[in-house]
Length: 405
Image (tube, rainbow, N blue to C red; front, side, top):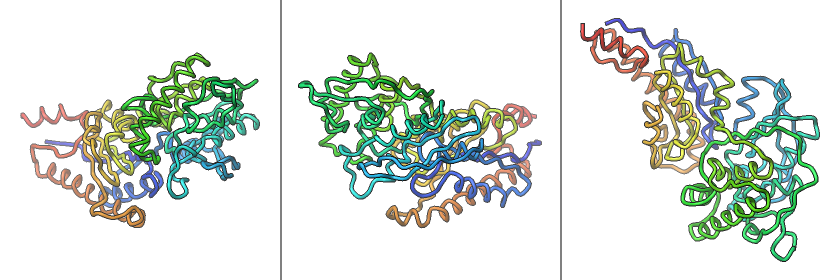
């Protein structure tokens, strides 16, 4: 049997949240590939699905510059952040830059965190001549359904007695009337969303993502009810029926807010970037794809980078291996979407500080081990073994025919 050796790799991981940027993950994996397959071609595509690293990812691919600014942070204090401007004039923003979970200072106080700074970023871009914005809403720390963002852009909220309310999560259930601003930013807004959850219910913003933002089990029924109430007000006052739309529950309801208040459309964040880098075209000559993220679990199957990458690799008949920091409940669901195998780099029980300290070393060890397995597969082929270990599926039928001869 004559089988072409593994010679073309694509490395397309997300960042490992809180530990390593996507580019560093790419560097570690590609170094392992080059060590064991020195004549191979490696194409690195640092990925982002709408959270941290999205601006870097687009600037890395298309070029452009960063625009620094100061906006309102999670707890109302000023925070320095930035957004990117691409060569065609499109601004690329991350909600996480001013309202991200990595910006939480101490114990989370979800009912008092705000998305006000996101509105200020959008207003700043329009004031500086931007007419098209790509906004990523992953990695958020907020549950205010984008009320803060809307208030920053001129929306006003009132209770049943006509008293004006501060746009905050703790006031959500009291809102009965919404006053529109005289004008809204004149921008085309494209939203990169990393999940497809609805706003309310067991798969909604509260029950799916609330815990990681500091919402206790006892708080969840009331919060979910508040979001359902707000959805009704949005439908009645703005004509925006967003409660059950895919992605409405993203970023603590920011998905619903951007659709209702600004008429935005939500798109799978990873797919937007994969289109920009012409990923499908890359697959024509690729033998194996590596992807990954910090933790692979049941949420990964709802639009995160590894599954978005794997779906496209599967369509092209290319194996896709996911390397991650840890594996959580429901991780096996990613196999239904084209992931060939999942490998975790955390080998022992330890706290997050220890994980941060050892993350690069652990990924190097894991990458080296996986490359050794792939190399063993090539050696088996050289010994005329009739069972290929790792091959491009596009050639599998031909190989099976050769085995029968």
